[in-house]
Each structure stands twice: as structure tokens, then as C-alpha cells.
Length: 109
Figure 1 (tube, one colour):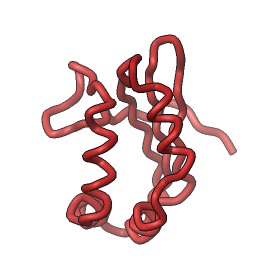
Figure 2 (figure 1 turned 180 degrees about the vertical axis):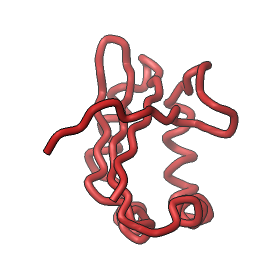
Figure 3 (figure 1 turned 60 degrees about the horizontal axis):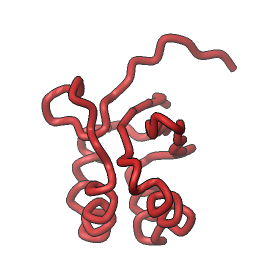
């Protein structure tokens, strides 16, 4: 199992809409998350800065392949098409990233 953390900004005008849609994530999207070997997936919001922090645990053997399968899923693409206009990716993200990946610097059980 590997832990992942990502950060992204949320447009201030979209906070309530983002909260609302994530209160009822589509079942097909949740199914694809599980099929992509992701567990313990959470998104946190830090206001007033409107930063989103996403955390998940990956339990599969090929993260790149599982993320590609998720990105190819039509229902997930529909979900992302709704979410992405609400978001503002960080200027400091790496090429090819939407959510900026974070380095884990501490963990304890």
C-alpha cells in the first residue's frame, strides 16, 4: 500500500457547488475508484484559502495503469468535466499534473 497526497485550489465562487456534488458522488465514479485500487480516498477543503487536499491509499500493483484506466472511463470523464471548471490547478505543479502531487514527509500508525 502506498499513500498519495495531492493539492489543488478551488475557485471561491464554486465552493458550495463543489461541496454539493461531493455530498452525492455518482455510484459509477465510486465504483471506478475502487476498481482502480484506491482506498481511503478523502478530499479536504481549507477555507478561506480554498485549497483542496486529496488523500488516498493505493493497493494495486501498477499505479500508472490503474490511473490510465480511470482516466479512460467515460463516466469518470463526465464527472471530471463537471469538477475541473471549479478548480484552479497550482502554477507550481509538475507538467502533466492537474492535482499537484505532494511528498509524504511524515507518517505514524
